[in-house]
Image (cartoon, rainbow, N blue to C red; front, side):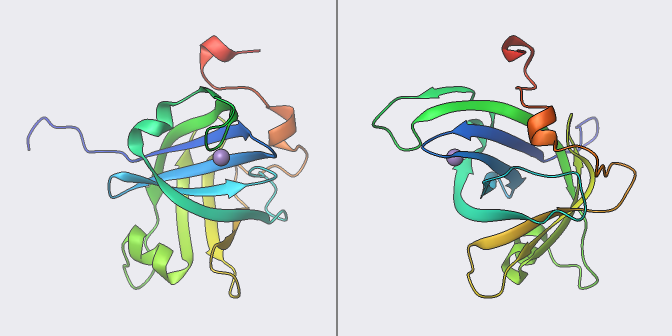
Length: 162
Ligand code: MN
């Protein structure tokens, strides 16, 4: 419709201090947040392959959540919004949709976040279907000199700047 802004799907990375620290990497696809838990967090170094365990889809609204999940509830612990922005799917030669690309085990995309930018890919490992690898493309946003999870540990929301 005229005057309507094209919808830009969001991505969010929630740093989750549950029993073990991990980073929940979420991409909006078809109205839900497809989600992967990344124990070490994303790396800007293209040589670093970060294990990403595919977990259940989350509601879009959960992408705004920052706070504490109470003891005794699923995922109990602190969650901060470590990064957030828009993402753009890069179709393969077969012109698969993003959902199909996930089914095929390979998703290429651009991130427009505050910490994560440029080209990335998620590739499923052959043997265990829930195990994927997240890697940064070697582009102008790559950086092999820092571990961004450590050098930039805080929330991107101003109220949690610390
Ligand atoms: Mn989590």
